[in-house]
Image (tube, rainbow, N blue to C red):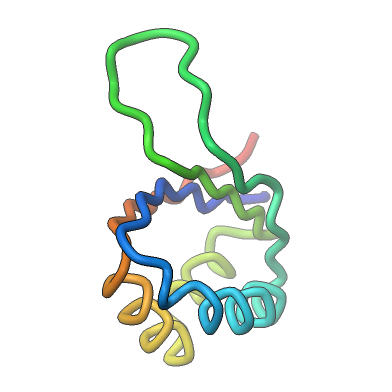
Length: 95
């Protein structure tokens, strides 16, 4: 069953984006992932604060999504992103 990694990103500085953007697609692909969306969110209902950017990545299984998130190659990219952005990430199983 497919699983979706959904992240909300607020960028504080852009210095990290070039390296991160150059390396993250290959890491996602390594674990069978595919980026489905990466854009500003549009609120339709409720009072929650929306992030600057929402990212949705589809993986064939939750296990592959977890393997991507826990991959040792992900750690330096995570630290790079954390140096210039706030990020929340969740995993949701598909139907």
